[in-house]
Length: 169
Image 1 (cartoon, rainbow, N blue to C red):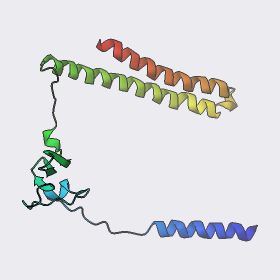
Image 2: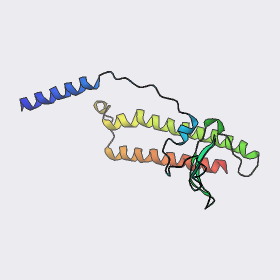
Image 3: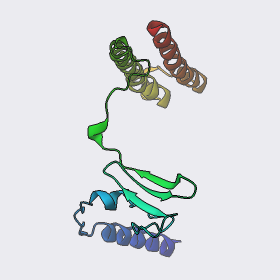
Image 4: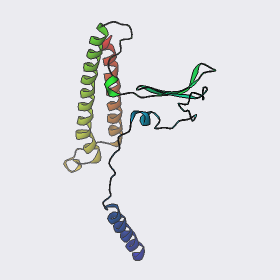
């Protein structure tokens, strides 16, 4: 038994020391736009050769595609989406949607803070009590009460989500 534990400790020390070796991290290479679009490959082997009319490769700054002249449709398309292109898209062309979107974001943030405060309070108070930290002083929580508090935490988050929905209507 003693020999078995000794081998375990030696193995643990070996794993610890071998895991602490320094490694070299290669710098991240920047890719050209054409390389980014074909990063996952060229599924049909398309080329920009004009004689290849059913598998013609077209590359633009926003996308790359393989085009079939006979069908009149692309064989595949690879989109390149940049962070610079992101923004607000108005579905109904109503500028008031921007204001409601901002209000929605602020209300969601407030609810997230409320949920965070509840979770922090629960973790600071209820979990240590359930673990028996104050058992010497006569304060103890049974496992059933701990489970009820956990369920109450879930219910409060769900109620907060419903209140957010009602608030935004």
